[in-house]
Image 1 (cartoon, one colour):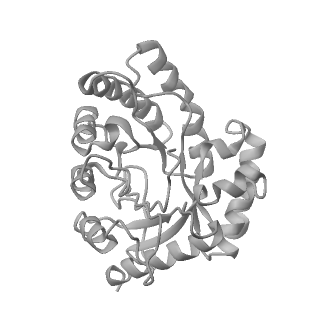
Image 2 (spheres, one colour):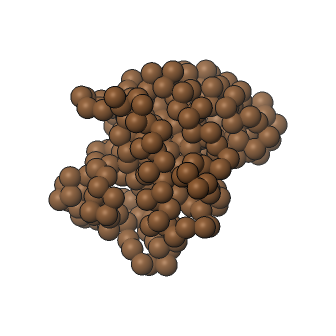
Length: 290
């Protein structure tokens, strides 16, 4: 996960291969664990505390995890059972696990790429055990755009085939390097062409590529949408990303589901940043929930 995470908004497709949202408002709000990465890294809270915090402090009923915060317990059934019990206790759904530091699925070395694919297997199993619908992965590699694209197609295809056995989606985020080029990543998706492999468009992770064009490129394959904010203006709006414009793009794609807020700014505490983020998301989704 890139260091400068701000607010990450994840919006899941109603047509997601292994997910169903049922009745209710078109958009709901969930909470991303990365919002509290400083507290987690300092030991001020743990992964097991997260569902309780989401429900009791923010009145949210769905969460998304980050793999490093499992502290090596991704295959520990006893630990996962405790986490699942906490979710049940507070009436919280587990939506997905954002997986990092498990190798590059677009590695141009066949041996290294296969190792990366296999490293993700435990997170597919953990996601299934917790009742998630997806894992978020990265499609990185070193080489030319064409070389890494071919490698990513291979790595993602193999992982998606494995994940399908567990009814888990494999979601690729534009997360730096070639993956932050919407055209490149959409090309990867076209080549993979599997129902449980899609994109997770991130509204903020476009560097030399227009963010609105990037989202438009990725939306045909999207099973989620991630947006970021760093600062808020006096009216509570994100200072860089036009959320009203982005929500129009998202709405036009006929999505329904959770919007996941993830904050990492410098001007507010993590707790206050999450509160401000929730307020922003509530404001922009309100017209679509009437």
